Amino acid sequence: MPLPPLDGAAATVNTVAKVATVPEAVYAEAYRDHERFLWALCYRLTGCAADADDLVQETFVRAMEMPPARTNEPWRPWLVRVAMNLGRDLLRRRKRRAYVGPWLPSPIETGDAESPPAYEPVVEGTSMEGRYDLLESVSFAFLLALEALTPQQRAVLLLRDVFDYSVRETSDALGITEPNVKTTHHRARAAMRDYDRDRSIPTRLLQERTRAALGEFMASMASGDMQAMESLLADSVRAVNDGAGEVHAARKVIVGPQRVARFHYNIGYRRMARGRFQVRMINGLPAIVGEFADGRPAEPSRVVMRCEVDEHGRITRLLSVVASRKLTAVDFTFDDN
Image 1 (cartoon, rainbow, N blue to C red):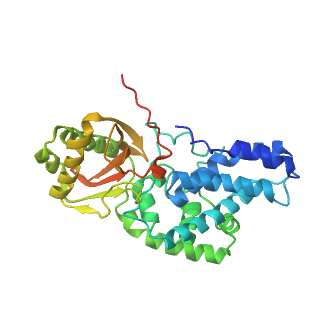
Image 2 (image 1 turned 60 degrees about the horizontal axis):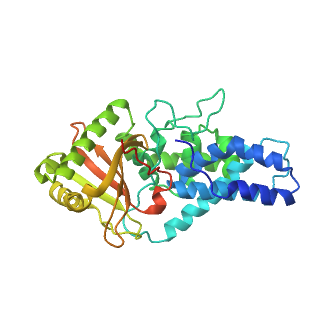
Image 3 (image 1 turned 135 degrees about the vertical axis):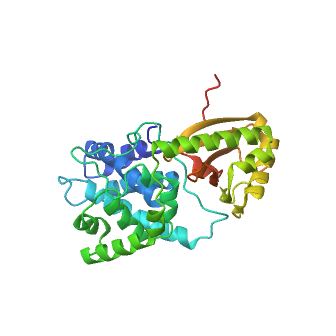
């Protein structure tokens, strides 16, 4: 799936560039060459596609209002520095605000191919992948693990271990000393130890196991078979729902097979018959993309539901995103055939 368009970005380029000292064609070339890379970086930094859209647009607005001193040199280092500053500020503001209910990353469609999707950056002569590859680093498990890091640790870890920046390049991008980069990187890796121990890489085997479990659960949900639903759930299963306070959603994590099955049974009983659902590859694993035809006031009209499974194929977590701002990168058109 191509990168979601940045609303108004082209218009902004056309309007602001006319009064800037740098030719409009230079901005257009910089946007064409670096927008995908910046979006990929900002999405991983924030875990939110809408925030990534805003950060990329704001980065280019800054470039047009206050261009780099040496426009004949490569633009990417300067653009990355601006985007990372904006992104870290956003993360600090987010940590200061109370979030209503559990927080989940916003879903993005990653397609069914072995290679990264179309919005991922490509650089000739390098894979641009370090400790974590491009697909793993957009998985929900990875993005949720990043939430335990400070904004600075998150930025350093992404640059060093996903985008394969050197210590010096990371220092330049973040405006911190090289010793600080090394110390921050060490602390970030320490904070990721739990994730690394139970590392969830979206292999073909895991994708197929997830697809089978999710399909069986949805079929049981649609038929209202509570017993079948419970049998698919691990004893430690948890259901997490992100409505951001915008729509009705469970504001606490639901724990245990019986409670999780009952919660989803009630949704299926009332709403699935008149909804449309499709399995898509979301953040590296199969997920349900759904749209409901009707509902009570403040009930969600759209959902992306993912699951995590154990080695036996039983569901350990059900993750549902229903907040509309979290769903901006998902295409809700359905093939009715």
